[in-house]
Image (tube, rainbow over all chains, first blue to last red; front, side):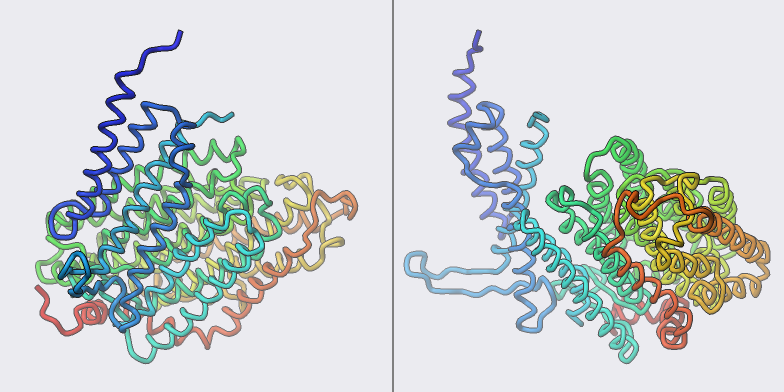
Amino acid sequence: MKSNDVILHTVTKFSAVIILTFSIHLFIAGHHQPGGGFIGGLTTASGIVLLLLAFDIDTIKNNIRVNFINMAVIGVIIAVLTGMLGLIDGEAFLTQSYGDFNLPIFGDTELATAVLFDTGVALAVIGTAVSIIISISEDAN
Amino acid sequence: MNNLIIIPIILPLLVGMILVLFKNKIIFQRVVSLVTLVGMIVVSIYLMNTIKNDGIQTLQLGGWEAPFGIGIVADMFAILLVLTTAVVATCVLLFAFRSIGEDRERHYFYPLFLFLIAGVSGSFLTSDLFNLYVFFEVLLVASYVLISLGGEKRQLRESMTYVVINIISSALFLVGIAYLYTVTGTLSLAHLSSRIAEAGQDYLITTIAILLLLVFAIKAGLFLFYWLPGSYSAPPTAIAAIFAALLTKVGIYAIFRLFTLIFYHQPDVTHVFIGALAALTMILGGIGAIAYSDIHKILTYNVVIGVGFILAGLASFTYDGILGSIHYLMHDMVIKALIFLIGGAIIYITGSSHLKHMSGLIRTHPYLGWMFFIAALSLAGIPPLSGFIGKIFIVKGTFDQSLFWIGAVGLITSLLILYSMMKIFMNAFWGETILDVNEEKGSTKGMLFPIALLTLLTILLGVGAEGIMGYIEIATKALLDSSLYIDAVFNGNPIP
């Protein structure tokens, strides 16, 4: 007999959207307030893990066609390369730079290389966390 | 500020990450990892000469001044070890091309190898106790995977011990860091050194020092080495060789750094205690080395003896003792990789690690045999090979400090080393040739080149000691005068 998981599926569909949106908010907020790449990444990963729990691995793999190991690796590469940007100006490794730019829609905006670094961290955290969960949930066969 | 000193850490890390993306392109992985390690050698040699001319090089990441920022410091001691690491890793990598097998290569062997190197050079270069912990974890996580890579039954059994032991010692490490931070309010090595020098090293700090000593003793295999012989004989030769050459050395490095830079005020307690542990390590390791007739076991117990010998030099805490220790440390990295590779080649040929099952290999493999002979003499400390110089200075250092028992144990253990190595040589290479060339289990094609390279290196370290001694003297002076390190890190700024 197939167990009834309609409620779990429905709740998950809504709450996953909320979790993923909130994780983006945390990520952006991290520039000046508590939050950032690591926490944002972990929250995203928890959203994906919730989806994995409610549905099954194959469904999620078919819908999110991302190789999470490569994602983690690309995250670290982005983070290290952003750290090396400072080397071009002769600054120390991991020195960040920022400036105000006048963008078409957003108006006067502050852009910082720290955001790029944080993006790398977020990708690394999501990739690592999700691939750990997937690999321990997979069967040997 | 010198950005170049971060290269030995981020270059292998970055390249390793990129190689993960090219999982199935094995030739590409081989070429790129070899080029990376050779690049590390070039950078280290360049840095070595920069340090010789301009003194200790530092880098504060992100431009945050010490003691608040993350600092990277390259003094001569650290950079000599980074250089030796890169050279040894290159040779072991060349050996791995032939022996590691395609299955392991596809399962991220090269990226993990590079992460291990990144962790090792990070541990050598960091100037912050907490970052030392982080880099230890980087190299340990890489080593956890490497030791179990391939998933043979024996590997999994031994990796379990290895992982549990290291997790316990890492937890104790964190406890030690927490105690030290509570007492001194800082974790930057230079800042710790200046604060403890100011306030004096009381019994509380000495106790914390002993706790940290025990942590690194587990990791280095100093007296607490019971996990080591099993763990180091389980993985395939190339991995066992890099473990034997590098991993215990990182623990030894940490003991050296802490007990010359920070906890050097009560040598009659801490350093004599290190000396006692070193002497016991040598005795127990020596007994182990002569007791077994399994190549793996003999070689791993020789790793243990080496640890004792190096720390005997620190225990003396004299100029000569430390000079000898640094030379012996470099020699030990080379020679341990060398004997593990030769041992692996013998096992590869005969298909067994027990001495009973091999005989007369010298007729079919003369080069391998004579290179093993040179390695054995060097390990025992016969002049003019590289083991001799380190040993003579270490023994002189202990005798100068009237610690005759440590020096005597060292000399007697050298005989045990010679006996254990000759046992392998006579059993495996002398006698009747029982294996025909066609009956051999594997060929040594391509394995002899890295072995020859390391043999050449051990001869050069001994015969050409004049060339390297100048650098080692600079390293020794910097270790014995902690103000050099502190001044380089704070760079003239007031010390808070």
